[in-house]
Length: 127
Image 1 (tube, rainbow, N blue to C red):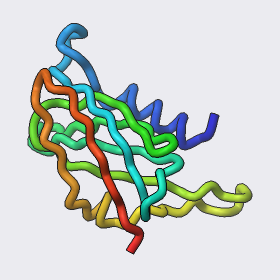
Image 2: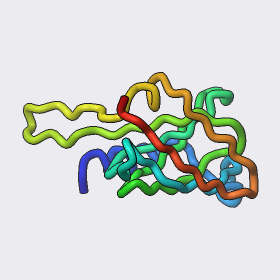
Image 3: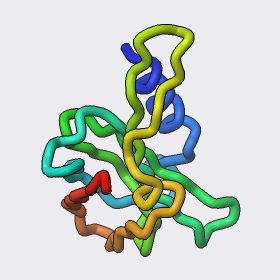
């Protein structure tokens, strides 16, 4: 299992995701596709951020072959998408391949409604 996948799975466990049945906050099933320059994004992660809450909450999903699934709270959420190169050796650093306009400086948002599963598509451009 890749270290990125372990990192994301660990993040999912720490982010506080929950469902009403588990005594957590209500969530909405979210799924969809992510492409970069018309091609399915091979691997990455997608974050749905509820910045209105204190402390801020982040709900993560793993992107594999362009597809993702996760749960996030209803409301207007900031969306960040990240993907990194796989280093060829331990001396090399991985590099972010998604432009900052889709993560650190994102303008992406999602409006989720309670009891309405969301199917989202994000068509990203590298330039």
